[in-house]
Length: 316
Image 1 (cartoon, rainbow, N blue to C red):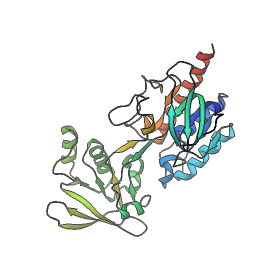
Image 2: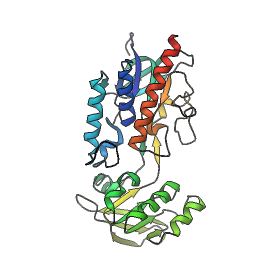
Image 3: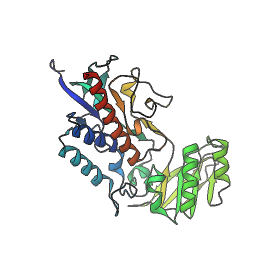
Image 4: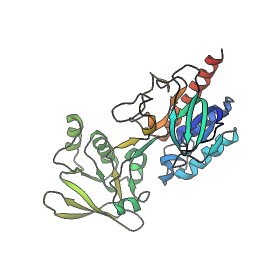
């Protein structure tokens, strides 16, 4: 590790909609932000083929193109975008303190303010056929991608509140929704279970798992297996939605930043402030309710404004 760490005003960790929006606002406020992209430059949207619900794109846009454009916009105002991953942090608890972040286990950065936009990673089943068809009909966000399957037959995997909510959402726009629950009961609240069981075009299958996702380039069907009897069954579908949860990318912040039981960073009130002065959190890393690109971008804006105000208070 270098003996002379680089010092910057505002370090942004993560490069999804939250990180790049924070960078745009921070750069315009002359905070000279540096963005480290993380392992997945552009975030989850780089695995999304079409984005139809982000304002300003009347014809829609594919996820990778959108993220390149966001990066270009941030760079136009002077943001320094770098490839690299934060691997360790040491935050100061003092107002006006200096925060230390290690990049790729070797380079030390010190910063007056840090904006954390590391996002959350959707959990998948890990089947080869599922991974091969991600972006070809396999999705982890029904609200994002369900529209593309309007009037079609789809399937969803999961038994919690999110799965139940997404199943009923899909049922409103799709012809039929097959819902696969691994156990003999759902984990969802009683109210959400009732919504599922009272929706006529949801086919609820307990003790059922995916054996294989069928299709070469796009999802064409699903082979299911009953984990009690071993009986297999194939159905024709065009979309498969995985709703078994997300994991916030917060491991390196444990012990320093306040988190909920699931690992999401806790922010104060309607702000992006964490429990550490000068450290802010935006996007899916602190939002387990909405998880949309537009809401992530909104909190990225908030984080940059919070950082700007914090620095002004420290200097006064």
